[in-house]
Length: 120
Image (tube, rainbow, N blue to C red; front, top):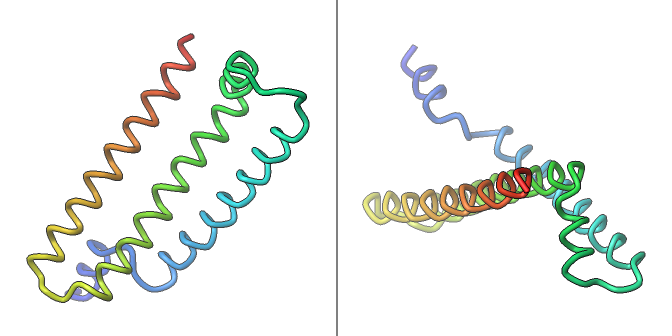
């Protein structure tokens, strides 16, 4: 029971973070290709066209998934770097806290932008 309880608390170990990293990387790459193809197919990009494209419901969902994938990808990557290279427990906790604060702040800021775009 002891190791099961620890496993439940620390859910990102073993295959799970590896899968998150790979799946999010694939989505990020596909989204970048989608953006590139979209930009290549338009004659010119001005604010109104970019606004109309970005605030289309399908693209809002795609961008929202992009943000989630990017945040998960960043978390797993930074978590692995910190676990591998920061050995002092106190510095490790500070580093984790800073990364979490930055990622949550970035996610909330992105969510605010996307949610405000739906209201427009």
